[in-house]
Amino acid sequence: MNTAARYWVIVPAAGSGTRFASEIPKQYTSLAGATVLQHALRPLFLHPKLHTVVIVLAPNDSYFAGLKIARHGTQLDCVDGGNSRAESVLNALKFLQGKAKQNDFVLVHDAARPCLRAAEIDDLLAACEDEAVGAILALPMNDTVKRVTDHKIVETVDRTMLWRAVTPQMFRFGVLFDAVTEALKVNYEITDEASAVERAGLSVNIVEADASNIKITRQQDVSIAESLLSLE
Ligand code: CTP
Ligand code: MG
Image (tube, rainbow, N blue to C red; front, side, top):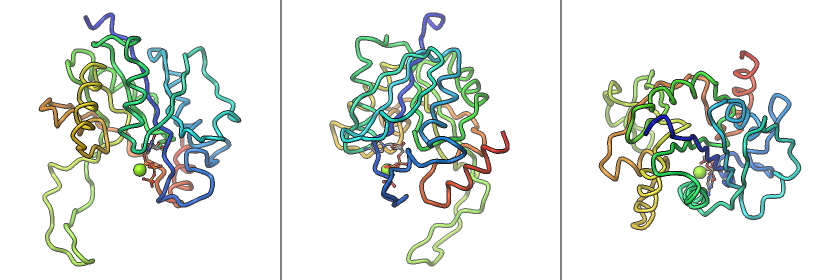
């Protein structure tokens, strides 16, 4: 069954970037000669195993059409986003329904993560090869972690079991479609794909990400990403 599995990609890019607070949405901010979205797409389009990328855009998006997108032969489709990241992802999953087989894989990667490296995609694909569910990239906590209320420390939390979930997150199509559909049906708040799959009672593997795989969230992240890209 695994030999025939294909790899589909969803890139949610329909957010409004509240925390980034700029007129131009953060996925269209320029850094190192291209937009954040173009940087996020590059390793996905360049990877030989990923054959279709579905980008989720805000229904009123006026920026994407003006971008030069180097697809390198990869199929590219666009769909409209929803009110939350999860709804945006579900719209893309619905678009893939009937195209992707239940056992195919789907990788979801944030448009706001411009520093993804090819080696991270390779590691994730390798970890999922014989997996019935999937895996996500994540980073261990390096700092001491505090639980805080009103700027006062309540306690120091044991960090040995804590990881930060990043993207891509990769699952069998059928598993992810059912998990996200069910979670949204009961208004369960999901901020990443794994939380929907966890809710379904399934076990999700962790693959260590590269520390450079940051998400552009606030303005100061732009210069950090620029420095990281210059190191590649
Ligand atoms: N996203 C989306 N549809 C939404 C909300 C978010 O496709 N309704 C996408 C964003 O464009 C981004 C990714 O999901 O690529 C991760 O979301 P986040 O970093 O939270 O971006 P925003 O929601 O745009 O930012 P904020 O939470 O600060 O408003
Ligand atoms: Mg958000």
